[in-house]
Length: 113
Length: 113
Image 1: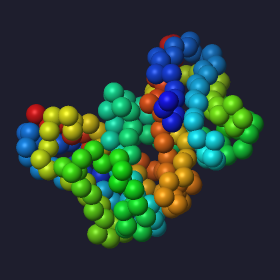
Image 2: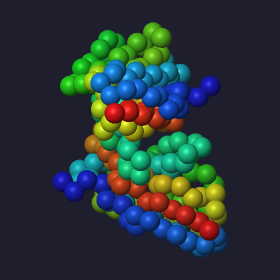
Image 3: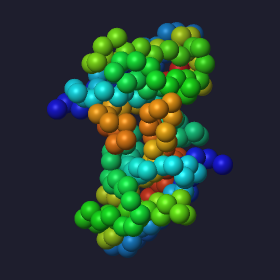
Image 4: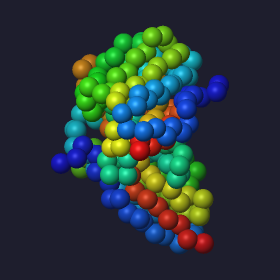
């Protein structure tokens, strides 16, 4: 299995621009999670899906953030407009069972100038 | 009080020594506990999972769980420089009928040759 795939691996953009991060979960995993990691706040859960349906988006910072999962093999996290404080590493993770471990993708390093 | 607390470190140990990493959690209903290792610039990867009180050993790693004290620990025997990384404690939490993981901010471990 290829594992969780994320793209792009690195993104540098200017404040105000739209940023779209992409994730392909491991085949057969019904749960997909988006996390943000910073030195100050650690690993924070932004939103998670079960069978393509958003279950909990209470971690999404504000309306500038949105996430979709149009099918079982693809999810996007969009930031519009982006701000410098959004600079972080964004991880996608998936699991077949919410009680079990999650498998992380390589992450997207986002820098907003 | 944070839901999952870890000492940020760094914890410095000489090669060959035992490294002890600790974690406390606040939700008494938590039933699944995980230790992840994260190398700099990489994504978290699962080291150990533990579900019942007591010790669980896997090679050089031993996870210890004490639900009464709401305490989880990870012992690394015969520490190697390659063990130098940040160790994240994760605890499951029930939310809206599903379980999700809450991560600590991690303990940085440095193993010196």
